[in-house]
Image 1 (spheres, rainbow, N blue to C red):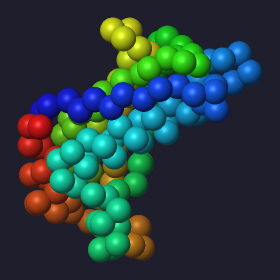
Image 2: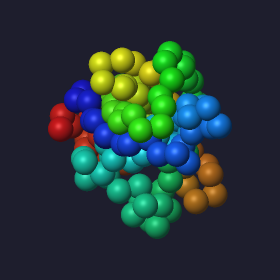
Image 3: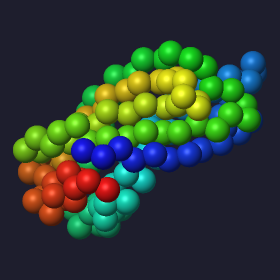
Length: 132
């Protein structure tokens, strides 16, 4: 499955007093990467939500390897690893140039408006598994 890359500049508001990215902000960057991967394949989670289908993070595992700093440009690399009956598994990296700053594995569950699991629609499955 093809990787998706999103470039993003690190701004002052992303950092702590030492000019290093606050660790919790990496979760936002990873979310942006997953969202853009989906949009690049024609899957708009906002539209799905309005149709009563949502994807919620049920697992996030991150390893911090190298700090990003104010002024850096990062690349958020996202890949769908697999799709279960009601889940989507992502592998992601945040890189500064060729240096891997963060690795992450994130799992989404597909749920209804009342947070009951439901199958991932075949059209969503096909779009997310398509090579971009």
